[in-house]
Length: 235
Ligand code: UDP
Image 1 (tube, rainbow, N blue to C red):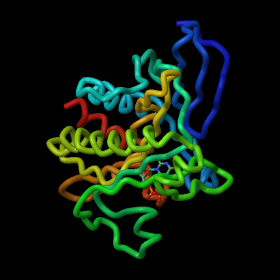
Image 2: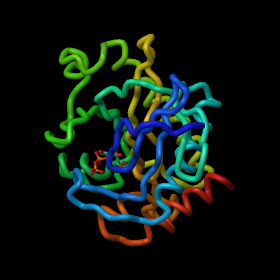
Image 3: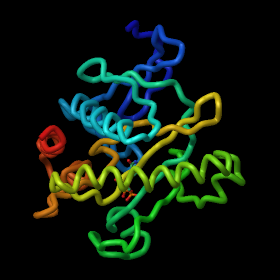
Image 4: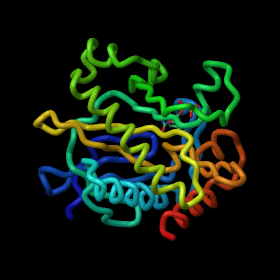
């Protein structure tokens, strides 16, 4: 696999062209960022861990029939993915309250929601990724109506599948963020990553945080937490 030109660099990943017309190479960086990039650090080993963890989640979801951009993990830090156009929408699914929903609505963290809640955010760093609703998403042209309906349904299905995987491993899936991409045909597929950077994972017994909140909240032990997630996924 020939690594070509850098086409995009984000906070946690770089995307390169390859000698395959239909594929990109995604490289996971060791950078940790929070609060829209205001907090930043290098955490050795994080990129490799997120590459492994994301690859396992994508393989599991693909085996369950979810269309994803994932093709294969090609090295310690890199995965090969299908070329897609990323929709400018972040899709957050919540099972328990935490983070921004707790802050915005004045709710204690860890309350069980009677049903999963899907939220949409516009991907726009300058505006701080504002919360939008389903009508904003298609009326303002961020995606088609069919695409928005599809991604909400996919998010709920992925939530069910991830919980089926994680519950026996004593991991509570509190919430997570997904991104979707469109193929030239207009079909939407799951893209980006699924990792402790983009999910809240709590130990089922102790509620210990095994995700990026360890960095956001200065709890320390981020690498150990990510290793623990990988260990449980592989067990
Ligand atoms: N999330 C993410 N990227 C973002 C914002 C949120 O991956 O730009 C994830 C976050 O890790 C959590 C979920 O989405 O698992 C919900 O995040 P929330 O809205 O509570 O925002 P936070 O308080 O984490 O910024």
